[in-house]
Structures are given as structure tokens and as C-alpha cells.
Image 1 (cartoon, rainbow, N blue to C red):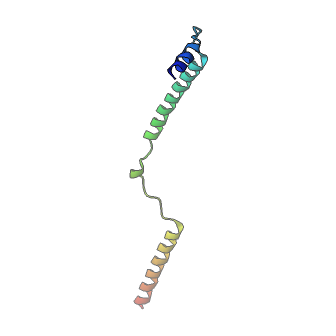
Image 2: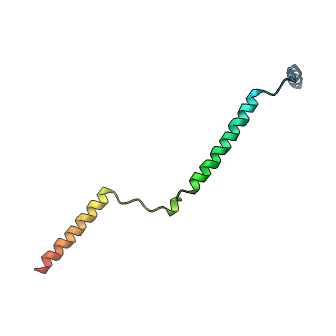
Image 3: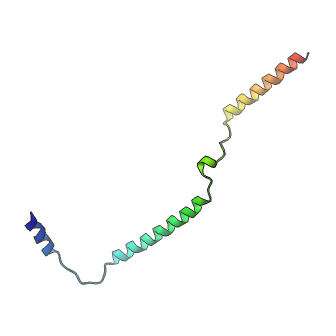
Length: 82
């Protein structure tokens, strides 16, 4: 098995050519990704964290129940005043 790996390594051509252009492209993409991360961190810093956010307003069903309860209470007081 070791002979296979040695042979495979020996068969690999050693190139003394200029660096591969793909490496430069990857470096550019990496630099762009880093700048995007920094922009995102700035954006998220301005947002309100979930634990500090105000609760969502009640839904229509809850509001309807509240209005009906208030109406029944007022109607009961009006009946008692007579």
C-alpha cells in the first residue's frame, strides 16, 4: 500500500508555473465574504434583540373577546342602575 502512495506521489507533476488563477479568485471571494459579514454585524447591531422587543399586539380574536367582555360589563352596570 505504501508503494502505491509513493508511486502516486512520484507521478504527480511538480509544476513551477505561475500560481493558479483559481486561488486568486478564491481569495477575492473570501475578502468579499468577510466584508459582507462585517456589514451584517453592523446591521444586526442596530436591531432590537428579541428579549427586548415589545410583544405583538393581540390578534383579532382576542380583541373581539375584550370588546364583548367590556360591552357585557357596561350593559350589566346599566341594568343595575335602574
